[in-house]
Image 1 (cartoon, one colour):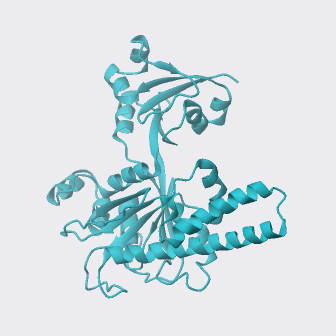
Image 2 (tube, helix red, strand yellow):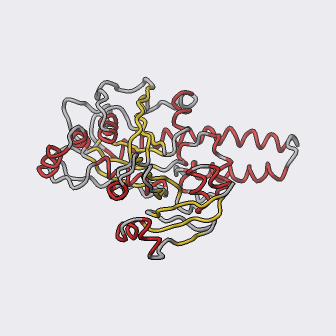
Length: 358
């Protein structure tokens, strides 16, 4: 999973990036205009992996991973002269989703480019830029489709007419100032749109960046495939640099029940429709990520293509049940390892062992 941290200049998105990645990238240096990207790969915190590692004492413990990129260069009006620049658009189009940081904190040392703090306005500014980008791309495609159909240029006229209907649907949504993720498109349609760089199709986690002692703000964002959260960015960045007793003391003092890193990653998983399953043994305890609705065959392919190619069956047990029994041998002796076929739908927290033959 690769998520882009986006936001207007001065929103504190690099602060949020540091909080999520335990990094120390310089903050407050860019006021927009120059495209730049910071990237970090972080472990997905999961107490179930910790428990399994304590139980099996493996040579290696591997957490699921998430990649965050801090995208600089986004600003109001950037699409007015023919759309976004190629480098920015190419990077944004390659992401799975966005963490959209909007400024909700007041700081006289960091003047707001719009003259005042208004999270809803700032959220709408960047949303509008993305919508205009998509509208430009969709209108260009519609023009080519209509001209081609009028001239009889398509060998498969029926397929071209289906594509035309799809893009007319996209255009109607965008013209109504709604993001494309509002549409309930089927997998075939989504697959056909992958090469168009449509930004409003991507899921969005909106993060209101609030001050250390500030009450949470209520942001309305009633779109499909979208979530909203509040985060004390500066405080969370400081917490991310601590560990052990120092961290526990600091969290208690500021009444922080869960680190922002953990909360945002868990919300990201929910947003993207992901779940984790595990493989265990003396060599390695490992968390794997698949889409909700993935089958045992999909899980096998995620581990290795050979496992999918030679799939016979999967041995499955929920992590809590395995831990309660004390291990794989105990679970097998108790007859608690279920045998599942290719079409079994993987559940979050499943421990899966693939039986295969090539």
